[in-house]
Amino acid sequence: MRSRYKKIGSFVKQVNVRNRDLSVTNLQGININKFFMPSVANTNGTDLSKYKVVSQKQFAFNPMHVGRDEVLPISMLEEQESVIVSPAYIVFKVKDESQLLPEYLMMWCRRPEFDRNAWFTTDSSVRGGFSWKDFCDLTFPVPSIEKQREIVREYHAIVDRIKLNEQLNQKLEETAQAIYKRNWRKRPRLFIKNGLSILNFPSPKSMPPRWASRNWRASPINPAEGNWSGMMSWNRKFRRGGSTYHIQN
Image (cartoon, rainbow, N blue to C red; front, side, top):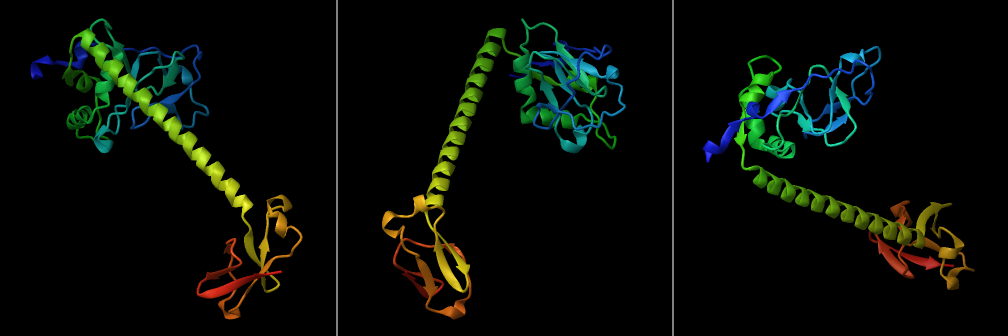
């Protein structure tokens, strides 16, 4: 099984394209979840012409803090629009996509086993640095290109299904919240005014027709309980905190 493991360095090479003409303005970083994200760095007065350009299906990783975070922040750019990253980042690409799919390599880089091996090879510096040579020396299984395509296809199918379920859950949550708010507005609220607990309706339209012409109030039988506010039930008589309340007009 381990005989199918090969060094990553056999399939990749560094890319060092600088943003010399300042044509790319989208500055990105990479989080520990291995996704590109807008950079939070203060770029006022920064010369962006020294920053590295990352194009579609190219990779970038931050070699610093690997020993501290025990994660190598690495990601592949899926969008067509190029981005720029810090000069400290390492940018690379797959040499020959007929031998290795970039998507397959990124899938392997998301595995805990990959981060564990990367952390193990960090140096003894305070930041726990991780060099390009260290990355190239890491090994991973390389099946046939047909098998790689099959694995990537199945992976994307699962990811798309997860995203669809998340969208459905969001719609259900929004529907539930809408129903909850609608029913909440239709029910009367109890508040304290001049020592009496007043049963108040949000609007005349929300008040039942047979109550519309009445001034409904709720007065506590036990005045020593003190003021409280909350939701009044629709019953003519109800209890709260050991005290009985009667609705009176």
